[in-house]
Image (cartoon, rainbow, N blue to C red; front, side, top):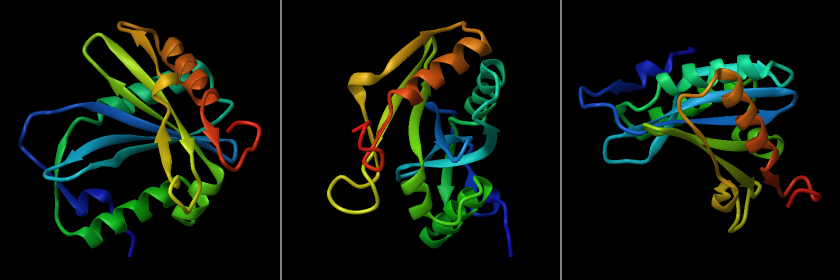
Length: 175
């Protein structure tokens, strides 16, 4: 039975916190999702999920990013750990992926944080599916910022530039 993420986690009444998002690029698509905090736990990638073609205009990418950032910054109460796993599976389905391994083998990732006066874009290195370097690791030295207010086209262009700075162990030319 397919259930929405909102059935797995409940929103807290606490004030909004950091506004963040993640953008994955894979198989000709851009997949954006909000990042919210879990009370007494790590951040979690959360709805809204938006899937765009990689050929979308900078305006469209910037508008999608703004929508996802507007849906972030909430504090969530985790019901049970197994429900978090089920929520991640739904996120992967929304991206059109069959598994976490498929995501790791095909994607690059950029973290995005909206602060009061700027948006920060942090490219990541995809370290693969196993070993000490597995997963996505921030490339802090490659982070860039865009001052606010900024147009949607400027945000879309900055996100594309940050994705261009990402590296992957699956692409020997980028590592």
